[in-house]
Amino acid sequence: MSTSIMADLNYPPELAQFYEYCRTINLSTPDPWKHIRQWLSETSKSTVEQALLVQSPPHNETPLHLICQHGGPYDIIDRIIKAVPLSVQMIDAKGRTPLHCAAGCGESEDRVLQYLAEEYPIATQTGDKEGDVPLHFALREKGPEISTVCARVLSVGHANSCKDANMGMLPM
Image (cartoon, rainbow, N blue to C red):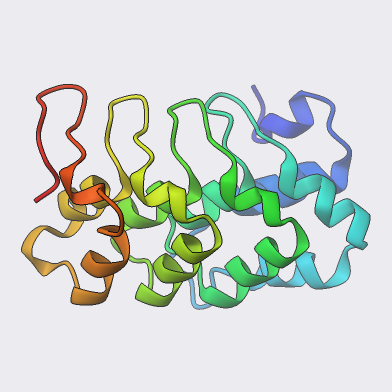
């Protein structure tokens, strides 16, 4: 495939470009979120809504999944969820919600995790295909460095008693 998976699949150029921005975020640049903010601001509402619901191969990730995997900032996450509230509930091919992705990133702000959990509370207790809930992801990424806010947000309901499917391990 060429540099753009979405272009190879004959998606409209605007959608393919946005997906590439999300897929190729480079956190070592001075403003890694510039292109995504600009695209969201300058693109028509209908195109934005369409783009945010696209689940792309090979893992059926939405732009919100990809942005959360890179520790996306609150303002972008907020803009996406306000444009397409359903985006926070979408599950990729591995059974992960955007909250799983954000929790496993290690760079996500506590307020992003809290926001994602508030917008789709069941995600805190939803296991992926391995049985891991977002708390498993956060603890694997940060270990004892996990913040109090993150642990509290991700432990709601019975999330801290969810065993993974592989070894039956509890998050804590």
